[in-house]
Length: 310
Image 1: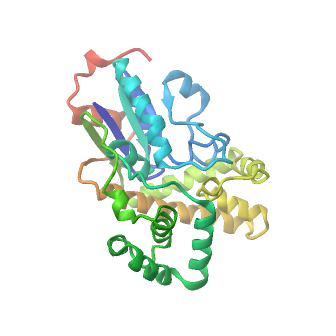
Image 2: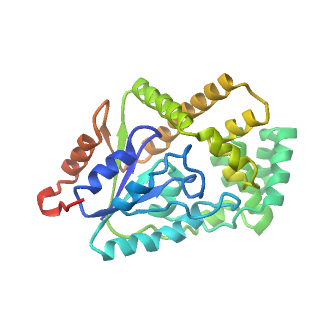
Image 3: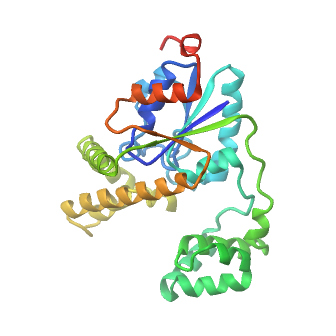
């Protein structure tokens, strides 16, 4: 069996997974598109070293932030890890909020060509100059099926579809018909949810804590490196980079980080709510141990026989 714990940022997924791992023979696989980067710790919620020594964690610190990384690369690295965990008789607990990375691991991923920085940059520039609708019209000619599934204002997905067509000469819709096989075995997806205002308060408190713990200093160090596009656009970091460049004052910067994180949480919820496999558990104001107990109850596990010493 494979267990996935999903939900929006700040809701307590990691804490629930840790509480569960202390009661069941298991190992945690972090499914987070930013925690894969070494040195990006404060603003990603990366588990600290002591916790990682106590409970095996995987999926962290896979590449330097100068390197581009994507869901396909993550799948290629993580699927063998899942098999190794299962071979040890442990439960793989996938935990995080990066929906595309979950889809890649659990359900397979389109084998279309990877990113082409030159082509992508050219398309993005054209989109900024002419607007997303103009690029969508180009996509309608190149790949009508893909265009029909992508909103005319969704510049990121329009650019990706055009990029694939220009690089490979094949339509993205054709590539998507050749998706890699889903991961074998039973998969259970548990989603954590809570009152929206409680979630927003948790997000803001979390951001304040990260800033007090040295997030700005970490961002300052990273700003002097040649970051990949993906790492450079990481939520929270990009706002801190802008502050360091003098674009915003401190109050505006913190306000933007909190606003953009709230918006990201809403997008995460929308993504996972669209997956009918997710079984939702309310965690309003409850301790991680309570969430772990609910998960165990939902899974109908005999906890005494599975419990191990931490």
